[in-house]
Image (cartoon, rainbow, N blue to C red; front, side, top):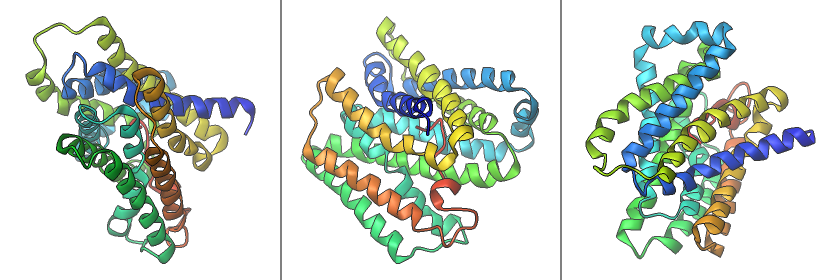
Length: 312
């Protein structure tokens, strides 16, 4: 990779890692579902502008959402509505850095779902070992930080649920959109638009009566534009330059940035358990996804069923 591509890779990871920090800021004045709605709605607006600028096939495929509303509804729910809400709910009690670590387990859930949803794939010993390593990392993070508080334990489970939903959404993308030639920008626009619509009713009901502060408003705008729409544009530009496998390295840097932001900007503590747990999760995910390469045609699970933006 060139120095410019490395900088772009790090920038994508920095933006995705900033999601967990900005959610914390937004939750000061917005409800959890409001945060999810605004991130999805503002991100959808940004993606719509990108699709219009791209033109060509990205623009011509916009009518697919009308021809096939079922897959769009499933994608919007699994990739956006459910994970965005669960992350926001989780961060009501879980520190932002640890939320970033737990959310990084999405690749492990991909490997868990693959034998059921990808019929040409079965779990082998290498994958089993990777899953065990990753799950030990999860157990270390949860056990060391949340086992003594029921509220924080439920918050941690909510973030893990978000990761599981994001992992599930990767199969929807691969089977219903990528295989059918729908451009990535159009697919993400569908996901964000439907996700925003699904969260809107609950966001209206749960909205606080007081007006939000300017800081909270800026946080949700940054969530939607910078961490979703701009990060999307940078990520897929990176894929065009260096390929999907190398670009996916950004997902492994994301939780490190989440931890860093939490320590520097929110005063959260950085524990040995969090660092070791993160390393085990990343190593376990890498072993598991690469271990499937002999059973899936066209490459390993990491490139076939990847958690795509804007979930990150």
